[in-house]
Amino acid sequence: MSTPRFYGIRPPGIEDQPFPGRLIVIEGTDGVGRSTQIALLREWLEGRGYAVVPTGFRRSDLASRGIQRAKRGHTLDPLTLNLFYATDFWDRLERHIIPALRAGMIAMVDRYIFSLIARAVLRGVPRAWMEDVYGIALVPDRVFYLDITVEELVPRVVNTTGLDYWESGQDYLRGQDLYHNHVEYQRALLAQYRTLAAEFGFQVIDGGKPIGTVFRALQAGIEEVIEGMAPMGVGAAVRDESLDSAPVAPVVLPAGPKPESAAVEGEAPTAASPFLREAVLPEKGLRPPPS
Amino acid sequence: MGSLRENAYPGKLFIVEGIDGSGKSTQLDLLHKWLVSEGFLVVFTEWNSSPIVKSTTRRGKLRRMLTPVSFSLIHAADFASRLYMQVIPALQAGAIVLADRYVYTAFARDGARRLDRAWLRKLYAFAVEPTVAFYFDVPLDEAIARIMEGRPALKYYEAGMDLGLSRNPAESFRLFQGLIKNEYDQLNREYSMVRIDATLPLVAQQRLVRQIVRPYLDGAVRLENTGIQNALKEHTLSGRYLDEVRLRERSAG
Image 1 (cartoon, one colour):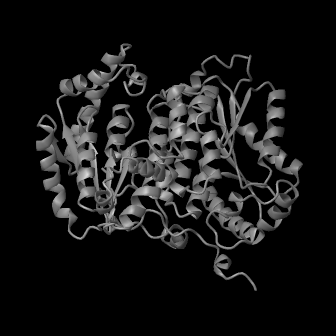
Image 2: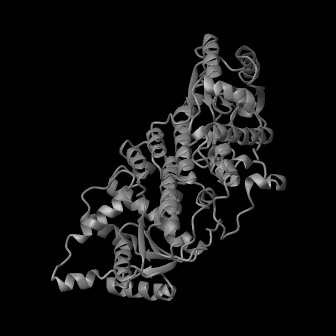
Image 3: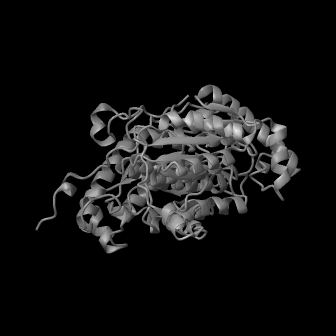
């Protein structure tokens, strides 16, 4: 990574110096195989002499317990949950990820701000607000998105963790039918991911393919990202002069919701309208359950 | 700069702001007692008190893990939780909501911690605009003197020790409060806040506050007379345990 770039603002306390490390993000829905791939990538990279620091949601010292406790209760609005996750995100960014990047390591991040944005938008949180808040996020060297179809996803989830309450949108969808809600929620979520993938330039990999195929695709992408990066112990701490002169392209967030996506994003808020929009309810979720 | 969302609910929202030692909480408490005695439906909320968030804030402060950004975000989480659980439902019910500190506290403190001001305003874009925002203006020296009189030791973040202004807590506190006061001065220009001279006698300040609040009370929801006063009088009881009941109700809620 050259000079650190942020989506919006540079937060106080982050120096404007090049980071010799790399920030690699794996995005994708639950059950797509992110953790398996990260485990394989970590072993592969470490075998080549790179130090890898893995991190993911709810692993911060500061907020992980608080989030767990809050999710157990029954009085949690979507904004509070989001700001809790934002706290967790920042704590890890500032205290795990950035120090690793400074030390010339590879930070391997299991889900970044994009999963948080996708989930929140479905629950009626304005996307523009999410992007404003995450203006403090460091722009990764690359975001890999593991895509999958609902039809491929559901059997995997049933076979591994089972259907999760939050990953089925049970906190805001109507009806008791967990399977039905899971399918519809994931369908809507995947649509959000694909929109983000296009707008933020993710490298999209077909996560429906066999593990070995996905792994090879990730390896090829990571080879490009770590090109020119010294493995640890071979002068990683030596300052790479070429980084200093690397041009810093300004990062511009895409403009707010486009008119054609208004059905999903909701209308622009007027001063007096409620901040939260209507949640995205899958059409079928509105029907009364079959009698 | 950003603006807050207009209050489209039937209820009214009065908030107090000011540096530590400005006497704002005392004034809000007096206003609260008066409104209750007048029979209004009143809901009170204070900074950093959300049941689901405050333990995380506490953890971060005790272990000194909070940086300017995480300090800001966790307080925003606390604010969001109280806004959606307490403030908005009460405003929908037509209540008078009293808030001891509001978004301006975040703008002032986080601004003093050098966070981007525009970002802070976007972060709090979901907040409802107060009916009246009172700012209790007090000279720095007087506020410091008031605080130092009654307080055994300053806490790390309270004294702004994380800013590295001074290694002496009292000195750090003074410098930090000065920075916050500068931020408040700017906020007074940016937002329409009602400035109260906090060096006036308590009673004079309260008279002003009530005078400003009164016109907004037309049509505010009043509680049905529960007859508690009559019951106490009839049975010559003082009602000294009633506060306990209210406290229990509040902590259960």
